[in-house]
Structures are given as structure tokens and as C-alpha cells.
Length: 68
Image (cartoon, rainbow, N blue to C red; front, side, top):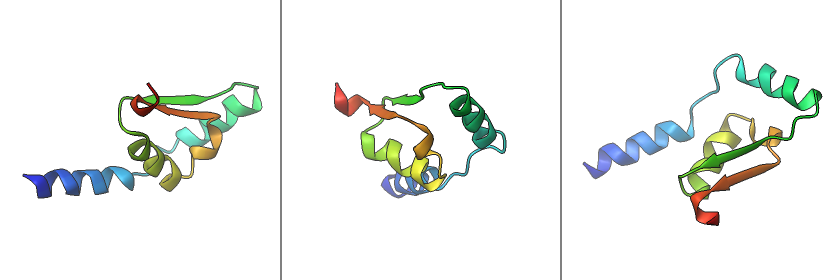
């Protein structure tokens, strides 16, 4: 069972955003919206997929349960 969980986590880290995500984030940013993410996953689990998808730079803050 552990192998299955590990494989799933590796897949999640390498997901690409849906086609409308980047244009949507760009539009929000251009209109002055301040963006943040909030996750109940550990911070590293949140950072990796955002960085891989190259959308991490759109967010002013990436918050996780680790911060609480």
C-alpha cells in the first residue's frame, strides 16, 4: 500500500494546470488582485506542484497547515 501512496504523490507533484488557469491568474494579477493559496497539506506538498506547473509566481503567499 505504501508504494501506491508514494506513486500518487509523485503524480500529484507533476500535474499541469488546466488550460484556463494561467490566463485566469494573469487576468487577476493584471487587475490588482492579491492571490494566495491555502492548503491543509504540508507546505512542501503545496510548493512542489505549484512550482512544477510554473504558477507559484502568481501567488503572494502559499499557506499550509504547517503555519498553524
